[in-house]
Length: 153
Image 1 (cartoon, rainbow, N blue to C red):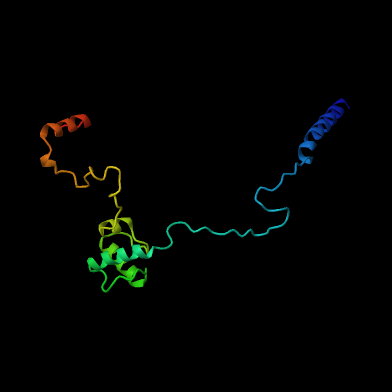
Image 2 (cartoon, rainbow, N blue to C red; image 1 turned 45 degrees about the horizontal axis):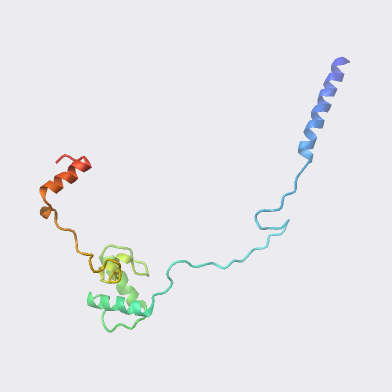
């Protein structure tokens, strides 16, 4: 009888301890924006990122450059039309670049339409020329660069 009472007490104590853990439930508000049981769709406006259109003045510059490079013919009209898009895509493809509808920055630079640095702070004293060829750099200077880089020449 003693073992029955001990077993019964143990089961009763375990049941009383476990029941509150399973029985209590804390209500938390939903975090997903949905209310209890309702699934309303929330319509939000989609923001379009990136450049959407090219200014007519810039289109005219691009058309002039494409005409100069013989990818277009006629007169520039300032409209980013199918003819201009096709000419730009052909130019970019011939250079081995991507052919998206918007001009690639490399294509614009190669067409001579890159950034204008004429109003930069050091525009009067700066040179935008290519660096001198390696053969014109004094050998002492080249040796100094090599030793600083840890390269044996």
